[in-house]
Image (tube, rainbow, N blue to C red; front, top):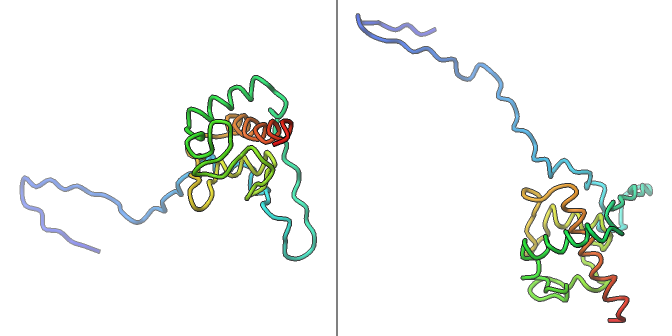
Length: 150
């Protein structure tokens, strides 16, 4: 208990500090995405517990892939991966060798979470259907290369 001597004409401000619990900051929505089930390896400790498949709703949608291509260019993915996904500073996307898995769900997770040694996390600025469209386009790069026989 504190006592204070008040002089005439003194204004007293009273505030309560430290007595209320602070509410936790809301989690970023991109961290709450259902990509925790995406596996980059088949290795798992303990009994087998396969992850549920996560399907891209835009896999065969040409309009979505066109939007994905626009995103690929506007976010300067081509700066690292090449305009046609052939690689450069970053690994090629137009082949079947994927460091963190080549499924649409793995590509989604890579875009949102980023990867060590250069791939930034775009989760704070890209979420949901936009990332699925970008993933559909990126996945189509390797399908196109495969069709050409590269």
